[in-house]
Length: 534
Image 1 (cartoon, rainbow, N blue to C red):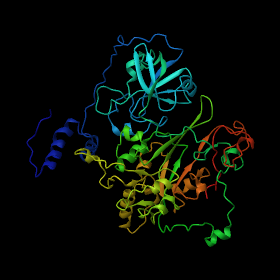
Image 2 (cartoon, one colour):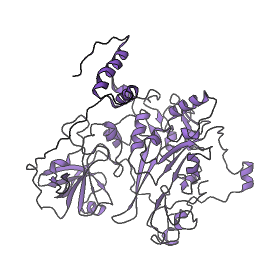
Image 3 (cartoon, one colour):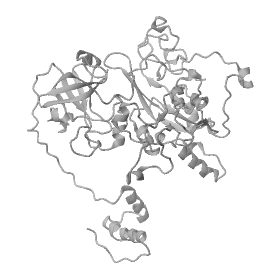
Image 4 (spheres, one colour):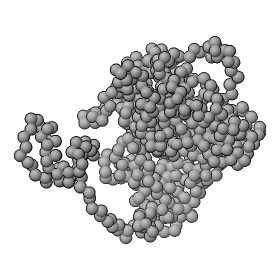
């Protein structure tokens, strides 16, 4: 332990800082300026000496290789993207956020191809028994079109007998795995063992949060081929939202719409999501949980479709064969200018404010859930319980966001607390908020490692958000409903030429005549051309 010098100070914080300067900073070799070093030490939680690297030895004698008794099927284990190999399994946020591909939570599952699953007689919600020479486990299953027919992949991370109260959900596939050391890297390898799978007849207690495996022909997530981008006449530039041509005279007179445009005198806060950058990592979902005091409801409530997260990461498999096009799309409240939810609320608990937000007044809400029924984006969440944070856990709450009680509807607010804070700060300077101050204001935009989200004021056309909105890949989800969302998506770019998907405009443009009209498109919905969002 470091010595305690004889120091005098008027209060404890001053004494503590003086002691760190006299003792710890000195032990660290007095690197640079003390104030800078002191702030960095506070951020890191202390000063730490570099630890010497230690080698690890693995006793593999107790892990015999599986016998070749299976029907040509190989078992492989893969790390959970949030729990990894189980070291993060005791973190409820990591358990609660749906895994991007399977959209499962709080469980262990086996992934296999749809053909393999059909051969075993497995249907959605069934349990499957995975057997090797070392034992067997019962897990959920997910039919993943990307998995080979001769492979069964089981996720690691759950089913731990030690490590905390949240680690024991599901089963631990490591118990039955064929573990060996890779000759080249020296790392552990959890694949290559023979396995046999069978249907147990039991039913899962955890269903995928995302119900659909593809878009079912609907125009939600678009891609555009690189060669068609900007041409305006290729299959990647078909406009799926078929609107009648607009009359400039009517637009000038304000008679081009059945509903008046809401007044946004200074701000029209909006969000752009670049699907070409989104990797489906789920960081935005966890950041939203943390920022907005969203409760962790657990597997029993998720089974009842009572997940409370404000952002839904939709995942779609488009195309046939072993290499489908996997698409991710974060969906939150679209902050519509013509919001269907606002008109049906009997107590005006949700309304459109001057900043372009679909705002919520929690104290007015009486829980009719009419707004959720009328939302075409399924973006609203209802509190079936009054969730509580016991002592010590309440310290994790954001004091700028109220917690919601049973019977209250909630949804994405574009982090209204952050908007109010930055508006107040710049109002004191008698200025509007500069565009560059808004780019990553929301928790989801700031947490995104790929910078796929850009927040801002849509009234400023020369901002980063304005550039995204003017991009030829930009479109609004379900724009044909004329809800005029404040969220625009930028279609993902693929590198498959139009010759590869038949030319023409395929059967995915919404005319209803399918592939008989032109060539069949096996790549799902195409992106709208510039101007396709009205």
